[in-house]
Image (cartoon, rainbow, N blue to C red; front, side, top):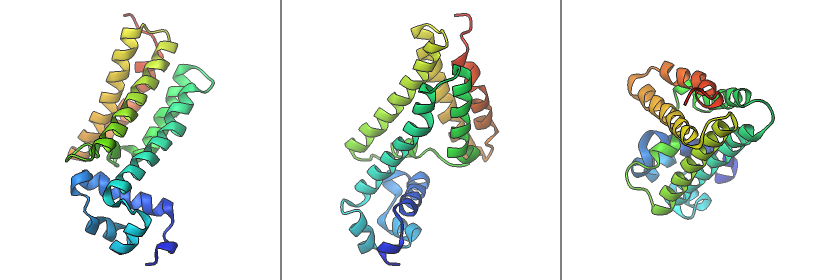
Length: 189
């Protein structure tokens, strides 16, 4: 299949699927070529930096999505609970109701390049900071907001792992349902 007939969107979606399933280390050029329908030469034409450049593009695309669908909505108008419900709905869709593995998480498996790991760390830090900010806005103390933000991220990521291992995505859906209560309502500290 000629490279010009494969859109960037399609290409990154297929590349991301391979990284989600196999992690950085296991995502071979052969698997990436099979998933995209592109020969090795066409893949290298689109990504001269090879697998490292593909992984960086997937992480950048994921971070852009989080910026638009998680961070921006958390800073938009409405009550913290309303904004968290919007974000929970976006996360539910992004992770296909808990059936899609977290690409940021799996990029840390198998020793990816340091620059890639730094970008994933920065993404998780931004996620924690955004959750902490909304919890502070909801009236929580700094320490409680930080703790709740960590609980929320642990719940989301942990329930995605549980869904992957058990094939049951209900825990993920429950975590998202409980997100507004966890971060958007100050409880006794």
